[in-house]
Image (cartoon, rainbow, N blue to C red; front, side):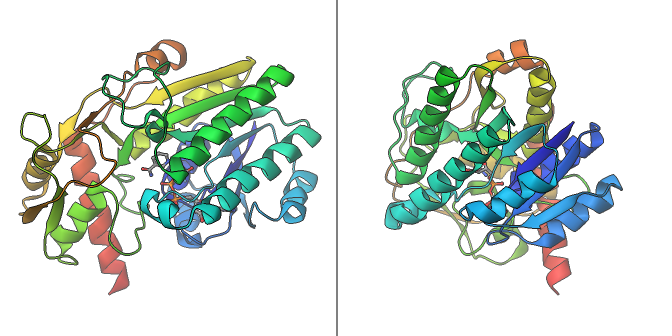
Length: 336
Ligand SMILES: NC(=O)c1ccc[n+]([C@@H]2O[C@H](COP(=O)([O-])OP(=O)(O)OC[C@H]3O[C@@H](n4cnc5c(N)ncnc54)[C@H](O)[C@@H]3O)[C@@H](O)[C@H]2O)c1
């Protein structure tokens, strides 16, 4: 089976490429490399000892995108390509609507035209907004509070409409919780420009000495230690969720939505403690004001993915810290 992977050079995309190739899928990758570089795909080839085609294309350019459909026989698409910074999306909403929505529209129109009707879409727990009810089930109320989240929700709605109009499609919407960590080789991982938005790259940058201290946004949440609680999952487990989804879609049609998370929540202070234990590196931190829009507690009910896809996260928080740290050290060493 031949799978087109959009955004395959990115953080989750590159790890998923490894899992797909190891599971015996053929892949074709599209990326515009604005948030990633070719090196991650070279490392995917090195890790798997397999070759695949890479297209340096922006999804916004429909003519360029069409060449991929003309030149290849594609059975399914995994669509990662997206801008993903919540903060940036608040300041530049049109950039987000243009890239995420128009890019997806182009992709789906071509899929329809070329009769490629199997799609796995990268959605996010951000579509649940600030829900108070945890663990979060897939049927929770959807209510996003920023432009990035709205692009995810709009695309989800679009996919539901497409399936309603033509039920020969097979669509899987995966709502990721908080992916962290890296491939255990340390060859691929998350690239972060500037001050990281997410906790783990921030911690590893403090650990390596790029930043003086970690800022913790709020210590007065109604949680056991006052800091926010999230559902962190290892990026390789998340990658495996895509393989499990494709396996199921081989012979089934329908539109399915799954939470991919561990079902366990960890506070910021707990993550720091585990990281320090796993790596032996001390993480200085400072408590600052809460960040607007952050909820106190957010973790998944992943039981639907277990039941339907036979998927469950295997790696624990200790593994996630060890692998994230190995990646940061390698990244730093390769820049010297
Ligand atoms: N990382 C997370 O915490 C997280 C959480 C929930 C959902 N997601 C979603 O998962 C997907 C992958 O996230 P990631 O962390 O790997 O992000 P990433 O930025 O590392 O990867 C995205 C890739 O898509 C490419 N891309 C973006 N727009 C493109 C376009 N128009 N044409 C071609 N390529 C384009 C980028 O160059 C990059 O390589 C995204 O859809 C993101 O919204 C991520």
